[in-house]
Image (tube, rainbow, N blue to C red; front, side, top):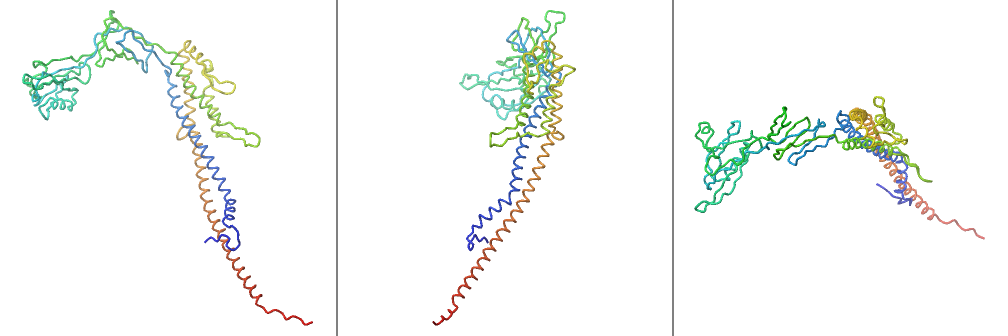
Length: 456
């Protein structure tokens, strides 16, 4: 029970709070330290994430053809060219003799009840698929054909009316992919009847037709020479050389020139993006390590990485990975250099010239620099043994220890408050008892008879 100065007149609640604030100073310092450590952990984790991203980019950049970039062109609109991984400079002429087509059949027109029974789809390889509609209408049969997933798509097409005015329909059957291998036939009858020769081909009915015969695309390389070579494709796409895809969409009797050439501008842009990624990370470390000197009367603020030896060594290691010579040659020869303030820069013009003068040597130097960056970033950001990862783990362990200390202080302070409240409560009770005793004595003294007065 709290007795707040009922007898003493003191504001004991405020007195106790003031005393508790003094006793809680160690806990307040611990809490502030936890906040500071959590801020450091958050920044270190963010830096570690950026390092892991740089590791992946460095891993890709370290490849022997990481800078490979090409422009791919064709001299006719009916031909498109794409250069992918493994492409090299290439130029040739092709003649497009045919483009791939999807096999398409349209049935004869028939009434609403003429589509029942069993039909059999026969693929070009002889595979037979029986189809039986649940009803006798054209939509019932089309639905059954599509559900069979036999490589044929069925669509109902209106076909006018018969002499009596009743609606007629056709079913258009189209292979779901182009090429001769996707060709098919549809018979009215079972698979056994097809095998026995008693089933009828729907394309042979009066009024039915094969709209398009499934066929492969054909091109000729080196046309008109002793080395003339014919290539076929079911998809209209050819690979005349490693990493180069040519897609045709129209026949061309005249030769079409296909060209794949190195794109120096794209190569330079790729290298510049990688170097700028490293530069941004180094700048981030530098900014986080700066101390901001305050004006008169203000405190100097330290950066979040100030005094952190792990981050400092990371900065040095990354810088060395970029600027160390490669086979005796400085990276500055291809436009990668540090200025006197330690800022990493990239000279695009110098790099592009180096590519033009020695493409293989420039690629080799760039790849080796990237490989060193990859090794460094892995050394610090590996999720198990990375130096920065271990630094973060150490900080987290310290925070856990500080939180344990804060919990202990909470118990101490709770006990201390209880002690103070009990002490002040007892003080009030004691003062009350003393006041009561004082009042009793005063009343006793007042009741004593007055002494007789002396006669003159």
